[in-house]
Image 1 (cartoon, rainbow, N blue to C red):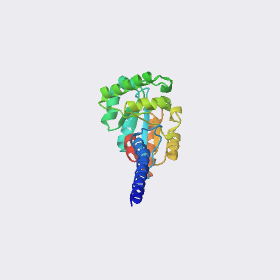
Image 2 (image 1 turned 90 degrees about the vertical axis):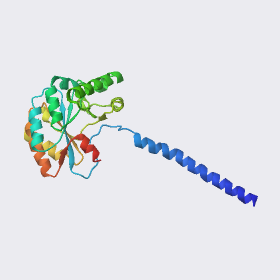
Image 3 (image 1 turned 180 degrees about the vertical axis):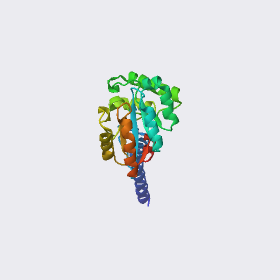
Image 4 (image 1 turned 30 degrees about the horizontal axis):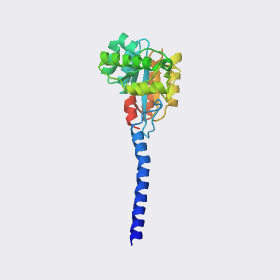
Length: 236
């Protein structure tokens, strides 16, 4: 009888050991997955919904801003504007206009430089300056970063995350920066965009504002919701 009792105790201990061993592997793995930040810039999301983010890089003049905002308003579309801190400081009225129109403001770095060539401290100072300028001039705290030239590395992603910025890229670019015709920009954008995609346009390009209503018209006819990056991210 004592032999049977001992065997039962040993079996129970062995089972307990196995359970503890499994927990030691599973619990840390689950917790890491829950808090692990993005390791790559967001290019698109997986969704069955016909939604796409319309985004603009803004770093030179402000000549097209009012026109672009008017198109977005008329088409009842939303977009995300990635602005540099230098631009925000130079054009505070246009910056506030973007926010007042219900569009999303985000960070494009303080100056239009390749941030992968910066040290950690330089990256942090650059981003903090951009965040501070946008917040001071518009009352908006940006939550996204698209680095200049779309150049990014692991170090920049870590620095951005430490400042509560998610790093974004895009899934579709056009040749608008080459000042091609509006119909070319339209065709490139509409043919390449997929559900969950992110379209990048350049505010300073000569024909972007002319192409925008054509792009939005085509996308909306296809059943797309044209939205901000933050709205799109919530659909994943």
